[in-house]
Image 1 (cartoon, rainbow, N blue to C red):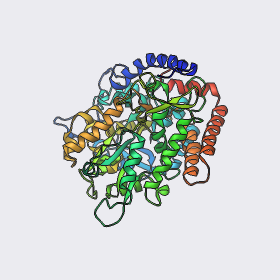
Image 2 (cartoon, rainbow, N blue to C red):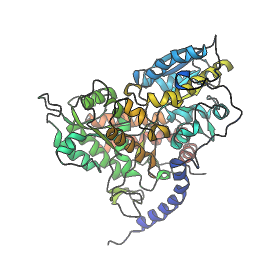
Image 3 (cartoon, helix red, strand yellow):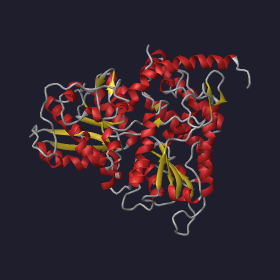
Image 4 (cartoon, rainbow, N blue to C red):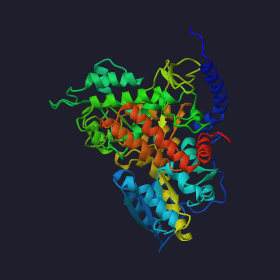
Length: 525
């Protein structure tokens, strides 16, 4: 056994402090003991379709009221809103106008309307990452009392992680979850079983499997296929894909350790061997992908996988349900696992990678540190605080209707919706999944991988601080795109990310950003 360095001992002392604080946060993520629970107040009429209930339910009418809802374009997320709107209109008399905006422009479109008070939108459906920018200025209505009075939403059925991270800001409920997001790896069960291979535990495993199946015919059409297919297009989802690789190198001491900045100094966790190793891995996946993979958005990556042309992919929960769509060539041939991990993790004092042991990787499985990444966090619905009272009432009723189990537990089983499981009942009740066409085995693997990720004490929370869209959607995304395209070296990429993040932090105010980052991790002050 090698003698421990002073830096290593300092790291161990810091780790013990983090582990003490982690016990409280772990309770909140995996059980309902810390997450916001709602005490019911005097019930108000709930908006519930009689077709999903055995008894007549009082319905609040909103005749003559038109509400405008804004969200992203593409079927994912917009489709269930558009499909459910006529049902809601028939039930309540309200009129629903849905406006869709390209994802790359959605943040600014919403921010401009809220900040300028133009009241174009009554309801906004957006990623919870942006919540801090909108809620800090009081743009979002406090929904705590509405939720407490809502008998149909079954608030405590929503998994504690999503009630907390996706909905709550400064102890107030400001949004309603409609979707739950975790990054996972999907693999072709038929290919791995035939080759007598296990699903990837480490990123080295991922690369080895991708290499083995690359340029082989994987769907029996006499055309060479690919070992790995992921979305790598700039201004799409590439930066989330990359960070899914780096998380297991950066975070090993539990959720409160964080995987973006040093919570004490707000220095980026970028100039180190961990990010360098992750860049090498991410770059190598390109070798085993389609020739034009750098231009692949999510839809293209998913289409290629469900066409049977990929052995592996990295994605949110959508691939699991798209795999049973009518056009899928891989029905009942897809498995899912927690994000692969690593046997070496970052020593934050030295910037070097050190081997996992009981102190450096206390949550390791078979010596592998996994850090499942709650990338993006899902989609939520919120109410514009400046909207007229009647529009607020109707708007809340609409997003409640979308989130209620009667609707949501069906919508999460439909691949085109982009909605993924976020309610406890969606994990415990297999019936909707079987009705949707998923085999019991496939459903168990799919929901099991999400469940393992959700229960992990080392889960990585996505960045939720002011201007996180600049940190990730601008600096990180463009840097990764330039690196993959060969425009900049690995070292230049690291410098570009580090310097860009430091510039944003200094502009916003280091102490302000530090306080926000620590609060997002449950660290006070």
